[in-house]
View (cartoon, each protein chain N blue to C red):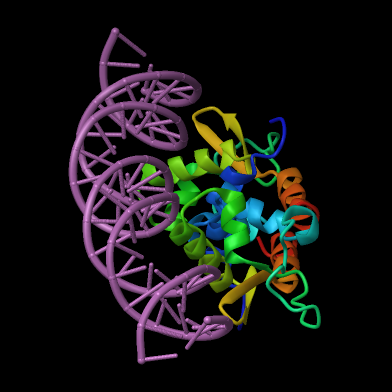
Length: 107
Length: 107
DNA sequence: ATCCTATATCGATTTAATTCGATATGTCTA
DNA sequence: TAGACATATCGAATTAAATCGATATAGGAT
């Protein structure tokens, strides 16, 4: 949570599926039709999509997708919110903005 | 030369030494004292540093450094200018700018 | 307590990246 | 043309990433 772990971020971005996940999470409603179906109306995890919905879309094993999401979270690209038995992942815009700035200013 | 090869770019950026090389090439005169010592005064390869000077600084084998530079060039992060027996590598600012924009707008 | 479902972790296998020393290529100089 | 450098490429060894199925954990429902 502290400073950017630039190497882990670039490693996480070096994979087509993971890039797609990030891209799709820009517009969760559009890309994940069943989005937040498990949440009661009064709860909302803005921009969050659960692991199962993501897995269905990427067509890789459950363990692989879980691993990918965990990698991205550790790199700071995603944040996770747990609701009941579901984990909702959403973009961490702060890191995305920082890494873009980092390329402009420090690389 | 065509469009961004985003995956190759991120892979190239996923390595500390390669990141350092890019960073150092922002200020070649400062980071490579012997910079362009082989060039006659009337020739200038703006921002370019030869493989040997880079190798000396990173302290990896000649073949590894050559390979790194080639990777970065193929990814579009560097461009190479040959002068005599030397190859001068310099930053390709266009790609750097594009990748930063890509993160902002498309990931 | 038991079962079901969602997600995480483990262990193993396959595939890709790192890194080297040796060799090839290309250019300059004598 | 031969030798000396600078750089590139090759082949091999080691290390890391990708990916899976199986199993563990944790919450919800009966």
